[in-house]
Image (spheres, rainbow, N blue to C red):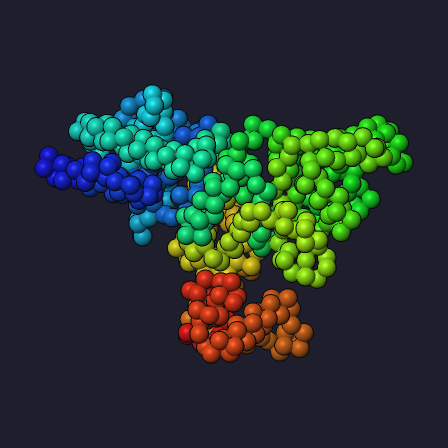
Length: 520
């Protein structure tokens, strides 16, 4: 590439350093510019987080690559790049597996990457992460000039990520929130780039800096516990314990003992004094999962602790003072529970000082592929595979799904699909023969693949199913009736029906087509 062309690509990036851009847009522009300077099929920026590398921006890779977490010990190319400390190109015939095999987003292209180079980015005098370039044909990066250009470009890339980091810190200070540190491991975290998830992440950062009690609501399987962990991790109590308790799993006769503790002899089997969850969470956070399952008498006793910070162990008259922040979660409509008399109004208002709603997966657009990438990499690591990918049909099937079971359903679906793919290629994990495994729509059969195409009406059920409909047929009929009734109430207006059904309009229209309601 000529010098003038290189300058033409780099000058806008220098100007961007002074602009207040969203971080993802700033990094996307960086990678797009790099691919105009060097002839790569894909580029990626990965942040170093303990023993893991997390992609924060990609260009030319499939969408699910952004959701993956790469353990450095399992990817020798990444380890060598980190150890080199400067721009490094791997020989085209290198036997080391490439983490991006099968992930370059070019239809009908070879799955394996044949030319790869990268370099470490430094920020604040320490490694921040990696910048990588990949090509599908050998010799694309031949010659020393490519390495020199990449090394020079890495300085601008380091300045770009440093600018993004500083802007994040300034925004955190503006909200009086401490800037969050990257996790030291690939513990599950809030993933997503949809507008709904970006808003949730902003709300989490805002409330985490306060001492307010938080009520997390959302459907089953949306990740409410992850939100609770995120609030705690970004709070001033992050160094103190986060104690969790599943209220739905507690027998009625043990609820008080678990929450408040008990004195010796308080009941049969109480052979010693015991601290409850509140005392264990002193100066930290207590997470009450499925809080809507608590009985009214227990709610009354919890209310006293929330109001005064004082409790009595079961069987004891002694007062104990605790300093605890409470985060509660439920999939129920607690306001409706109050109206029905199953929840105390004062207890509800004490809990929901700051409500957080976790969006359903069907409201998160293409986040499904990002999350699928996370679960694919988990399965790849667990099974010792060289690579694990989705073909185009499988990606389309995932995007077409309505996801009634949300993220948990997606996780289980991917795990089942991997096992099915392994069953037809049993040698994929044989010693010394680990290779890439591709999941197709057929591997997702029975769930995603069984859904009718978006443009086709629902197929009539066989006669024996019509006489005794199964669960799937009953669910489809129920969904169809709900949509039809809502449209009728709103005069055929899809936007109004979507608001009533708490769905994205586009997702509602796609679901309606699959249910045979015609093209909206």
